Length: 362
Image (cartoon, rainbow, N blue to C red; front, side, top):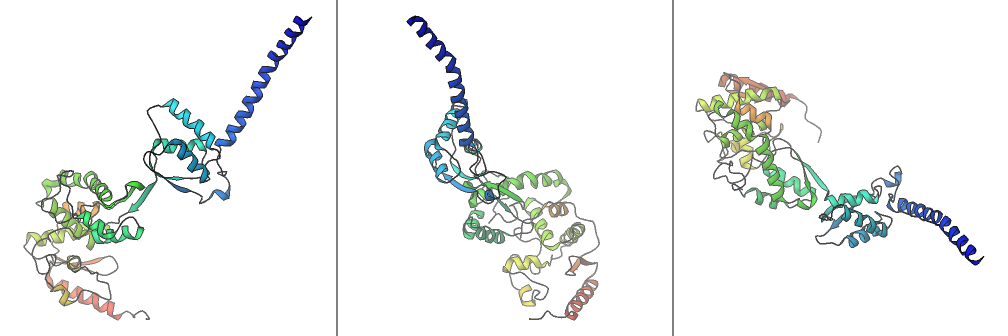
């Protein structure tokens, strides 16, 4: 009877074991589902604007990362983090969590946060450089965003990396004109003046340089002259349709040995900017400067801004025209003239129109 009783107990335990295991598995799954779920529901309004920047220094242990994430309220459970870390290492024993700055949200599940750090998807910083900006404008812009000091950018822009970009013209004093205007993204931990400049030079190499290489047989301008003319067209032109004509005027003047006599070069040389109500004065136009094209023949020594593709193409393929002069109407358009007398008459008419308009109340 005792033997039968022992057998009955074993049968009972054997029958009970699957149920115990099933309950344990169910409870474990319930815990895991809770532990790896987002701290804040993605559909909750409370999750808006809750993203946190986390800095992970090089060599930080996985356990330390998990504790920091839990303390920051980004994950529910450090123990769950450890389990997922073991799973990631089991899947790829050559990988690991990457150092850097991450933008993480409590609306993300633990697994997504871990995978993001494992893959090294560091926070990206975006910046936009408009066409026609000078190095000084870029420097001021970067400092205003808090990325780095304006002078750090100008110092970096005076270093000419011909080892990485051998196509850059010789004897450049700075990189004016060769930092391509565009929208960029950089990892936040690489946001430095040299890194920004390298990315912008690479974009010029990818976008602008092939245009010149493909059309260099169409022009007598070398690379520096082409970019310089493109930068002047960029500063003068407002309407896209006028770019080739403006480039044609300057090309004709160069071919005829006439001075370019373009205001933006004077402004660049003096570090000023004229307005409708404060145009360049006679004294400013007569102020000596290597960039003063009213005094000096030919193109200025360097570009005066960063031209975009449209202005670069216009400089490479200028309109063939008899026009030798143009004057701005201050509405974006210009009046083009073939003779000096026509140009002077147009300039006088535009100035009279501006002077006749009521002055804004001070």
